[in-house]
Image (cartoon, rainbow, N blue to C red):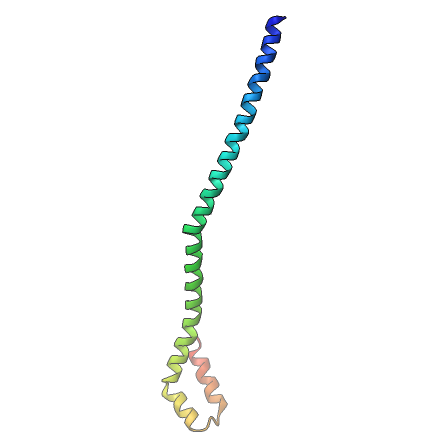
Length: 100
């Protein structure tokens, strides 16, 4: 009987020590992981996203700028404008032929 009572007290004492310890370790691990993930986002992921967005914007703007630059130096367009832009079919055929 005394052995059973001693075992019971020992079990209760062990539970009173282990359960808060597990909870404390879990909370410590949670805060460490949270800080680690936050640091990784700030140092790695966000700069990559910024660079990707910058690259996407510059590539989308590059094609129209290149096309307009080429058209500004095109002698056919210069002649067509200087002639008064009288025949829209000519410019439509020209634009269809150079469409990317």
